[in-house]
Amino acid sequence: MVSTDQIEVLTPSSFFVPRRTDRAELLDLGVGSDEDVKANFDDLWRINRFLGGVQALTTHLYPRLAAHAGTPTVVDIGAGSGDIAGVIRQWAVRRGIKLHLWGLDLSARNLLLTQRHEHLNARTCVQADALHLPFKSGSVDYFISSLFLHHLPPEPLKTLLAQTFESARKGIIMSDLTRGWLPLVAFKIGQPLFARNYLTRHDGTASIRRAYTPAELLHMAQAAGLTNARVYQHWGWRMTLVAEK
Image 1 (cartoon, helix red, strand yellow):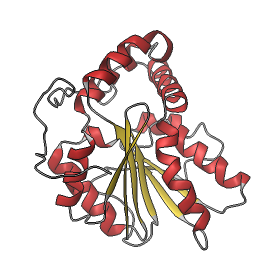
Image 2 (spheres, one colour; image 1 turned 180 degrees about the horizontal axis):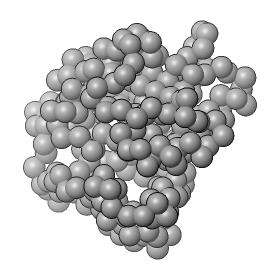
Image 3 (cartoon, rainbow, N blue to C red; image 1 turned 60 degrees about the vertical axis):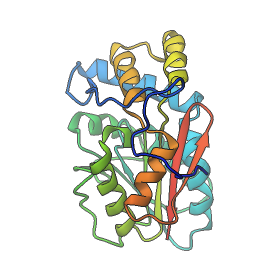
Image 4 (cartoon, rainbow, N blue to C red; image 1 turned 30 degrees about the horizontal axis):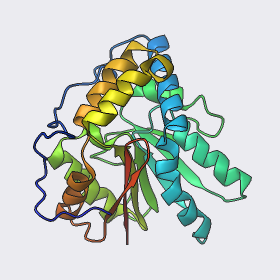
């Protein structure tokens, strides 16, 4: 867990941490063909699978789902290609856990790729704005996300955290990158293996520069009213915000 003692929301640039910049990502701007987008999501899946993205989220989610009485309902915000949601669904099926899992994304073309998974389809994929969630309060146990938080500036991010935590029956579990010079250097070195598509190379760099530090994320969670929030740091420069009721 990280402390917020004398932490500002946006940490000044330093030897280890550059100042946060909101450089637009090409995928969000609708750049690229369908083939480019698929190649980009294939890159992201390799990164999540082998560089800690899946584990950073599921380490906290799986024990809670296993201990849940009845059928838990989970909404994956910014589901993207649906790869992580697919992994969660397969995990639940193998353990005989009934699970209601929804993938939410604002992009229609992202959702078309999401539906390529046998466990996700048009009935469980929702096109919607994360700041205007189409779910009745108390109808969702856990709101989760992976690589989504950095897309939002501080004030909208605090709004998202407050709204999802208030609406959830159990809580929120949201994982993201951490900003720093070291992850930027590591991403540059690893591009031949993990960032083969030009969208991934551009947006990966932009994502790291847009990301928050663990202290910043915890500070904003507390400012949003999540008094019991915790931020856990994981290998691969990942962090996960967990806030339970």
